[in-house]
Length: 411
Image (cartoon, rainbow, N blue to C red):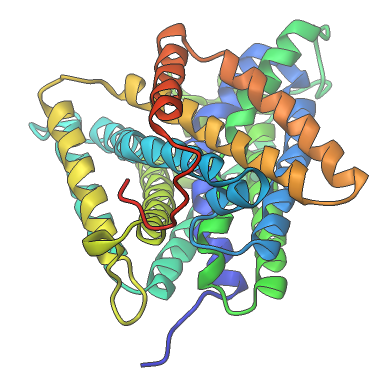
């Protein structure tokens, strides 16, 4: 059977939805509330930084292609122990984060089904089952699903943003005093919009021609993400709430001119497909990482290269997390905080490897800039989460032997 791989459009579709994620819903009104009308300049700066971030990992995945992604680059730069640490960070993040992402979507669906006896957890579990089924198909099919999801979300959000222009407030677009501390806080929040690009490497073995497909996909995804984020941010910043029913969420206001009373339902649908796209990207990348770094049952792949055994393990872990959520043994905020901290650590591993491996002053300067920004972002995590990250890292450091250098080791 001929193996089907990803082209530029499908790879960009696989990345665009997750990069937008729930951030495109949550961040625009949040950053505007903090930074005021100068928030749009924070968005412009961060979208530029996001493209640099994506380009660094695109070059890294072209020069060092492997299902392990960042972990493989870390090994080439610093040795086997660095690879294992990057694997640890990514698998830990992928164990907690995706379930929380689907819970976010479940909360939005629950919000439009007021009075229903069905809980948020049930809606999230249904989305989980849908994602489980999709991920059991070939990577080309997963890419097509993600492409449809992200394209539909982008069209709806852009359509809502542009049709809200006649409802913008009167007067100058930039009002109020510039406050450096608030502007800096807004920039810090916007770094969440960058997380996700580092997973390009986990799909580097699934594309037709890496040197052509990956750069094109990054350009397509980067332009799409930038356009959608800036359109939503501008609409959230300048729309006049006085022209609509009071009490509505900012994003609902933006979509009201186009969708009227169905705006909340559209927001719920967009959030759901973007969160599902995030789940597909993270879990697909984690499964390929586990399969490439283990032996025995977990390394099993089908004839068309699906890491079905590793997917089964991740599904079992996430099912356990959902059980904990059902019985309120853990909450979504805790899951998000843990996953975000470990995703940042994983990104830092990749940026440090890129600094070591990529030649040229420009690449190194970009890496230094991004390393500083992500380190600062990590420090803003809560103290318990930081302690947990340090504890996991310390346990790894104590148990990992520098003399043990094998590619096939059970995680």
